[in-house]
Length: 354
Image (cartoon, rainbow, N blue to C red; front, side, top):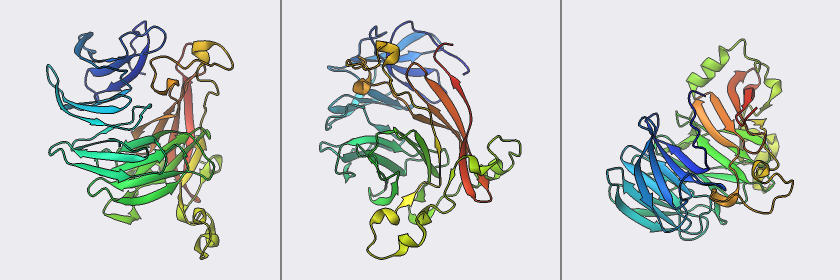
């Protein structure tokens, strides 16, 4: 951790503007720092609120770029020009979106449609709207690749992650997280747009190859990541046996995946590697102090503390942030061994008190 800020009050949602000094803040918790219906753009260099936007209901999430501000409410999405004062560019209705799902790219924005399971993709320059029938159940997670070419989505069932090309909104691939139902915590795409990381309440981190948007049958391969991982002779995870490996993820079930009329799960694309993550069984414990809380955390999207949040440090290093009284972050590295690529935990640290 390079720097920390203690606001001495609750924060329900936050978003950084890259490495700039602007941070979007929304109040939350029992003692919110700001009203939950206000979005504060905080100038951390001057320690003042540079911009304030007020809404008729709770702000659930926001996304920032150097030219736009995207705000998610329960049933609507608003896009503003990042100016002083901010100017509203457009607004869209959505289905119930308790997690505040939304994505902001340089050319497009993406968010839930008016029908559960659908995604709206809007071109910022023209205002053209496209509808993607992504899932048959409500959306649980979505992420846009850094280059804006791929949109990944997961529904409340949590078994499949679907990938779409933002150029034509066509589905380009379907990835299987698992067979059992699960709550997907987070989706994140690597800086090189080649790998997808997924966490869920199954306490597992999965790493998938991403296909090229124009040629879905050819996956990207982050050569730089493999080369550097290979050079880590002193890595405590140099032995791939310490983690899960699928050297060829399309052949997870071997010959069973080639037999006609077999269930599709035998031929689906699975992660090439996975590793266990720490998740707190009681994310409310720090607030309620009870083993079986009945009151959601006020001012927090969904009423639950986010956990399993993924961040890519580079193309071969992933950080997963947990929640709860034992909140911690874990660092994972991706490497290459004789049996194939692997992912393993390199370290962890608690971030809440001592």
